[in-house]
Length: 184
Image (cartoon, rainbow, N blue to C red):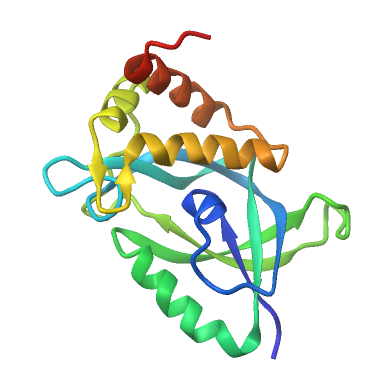
């Protein structure tokens, strides 16, 4: 049986709650991470959704994250768990994934499964001004904790693998200013 890889670009980077055989920093091409998905089941509640990331097509862009290889005997259980975890408007997507350690050249890749929110799901919020996104994040909390925790942990997790994301960092800066009065 071939290896199955999962690509995480949001909470799957910092909250791995499933068994893995291997993990490695990785990236995908022509996609960007954006805080365009509402969360009413993890980082917000119905009537006061939090904001979490999804992928949007972005030719020429790179999105860094973490790739996880699943043990073959745990594949179905992990996929079922992740389908449930990502149930709030996310759908499975298979994408080519590249590794940072040059095991693969820029033209070589493997295919990984990820979850992304589509604009036709009921929790999709879409684009908004960064200050509006930050204010919504500061005001939201759900069963998985404060929405602030999500963005700050995501920013820290990206930094830990040597990756940055201007969208995440820009909104995280605004969140810190609103919540803690911090300035750069």
